[in-house]
Length: 327
Image (cartoon, rainbow, N blue to C red; front, side, top):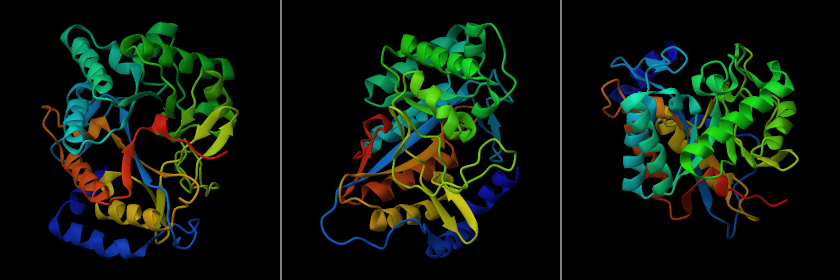
C-alpha cells in the first residue's frame, strides 16, 4: 500500500518536479568515471514479468497470488504493452508465468493468442517462476508448493518446477525457452546451478545492493554491474539498480524521471569499450492494465521512458536472450 500511495503522489505535477530535482543525487558507485573515446551501444533490455492481476483505479496492485482467477495481466496487459512496443519499434522479453495456461474457455484462448502475438511480433518469451501461485505448474506436477524462494526448495523440487514451466511454455509457443527470472528475484547463487541444469542460458534475477525485508532475496552483497557467469553455462544479466541517498532502487518505469536519470548515468559511465552494455529494466504486465483492460498510468510512464531512452543514437532496444558478454 505504501508503494501505491507514493506512486500516486509521484504522478502529480509537484511529484514529477520533485523527482526531476532528486535525479541530481542519483549515483552508482561501482561504475567507473565517465569513459572517453569510441564505445559500443548501450543495450536497453526491457523485461516484462508476465502474470495475472490488474491495477485498481487508486493505483493499488492486485497481484496473481491474491487473485489467481484474474487473468487481465496476461490478456489486456500484454496487449497494451505490445501496442506500445510496436509504436516505438522496440523489442522486449516477456518473462511469462505459466499460470495463465490454467485459464479455461475463452480466457484460455485469449492467453494463447497474446502468447502467439509476442512471438510473431519478434519479442522473446522466457520463464518467470512463482512456485506458490502457479496453478498450471501445480496441475502438471499434481501438487502445490508452499515456499516462494529457491533456497527453501529441495533441489529436485526446484528442477521439477523449472523443467515443467519451461516445457509448458515451449508447448504453447513453439519456441525454445532459454531466459529466466525467479519471481520476486528470489533466486540465490547456489540454486542457479539448477537453472542451468534445466536448460536455461540467461538469468536476470539479481538486483545488486537490494535486499527484501521479508528475506525472499538478498543481493545486498553484490555490486556487480556487468553480466557474469553465475553457474556453468548460465549468464547472469542483473537488473540495473541505482542509489538515491541511502536508498537503492531498481530500474522500473514507475520511478519516472529517476529512471531517466539512471539511464543517462549508465550511458555515461557503464563500460562499453569491449562490448555493448546491457541496461536491464523491468516492469509487470499486471501494471499495464486496469481491471477493465484500459491502459494505466504505469504504461504511460513506460512509454515516456522509451521515448527518452531511444532518442539517444547509441541506445538500442534488444531482447534478454540476445545479450552477450566477453568471457
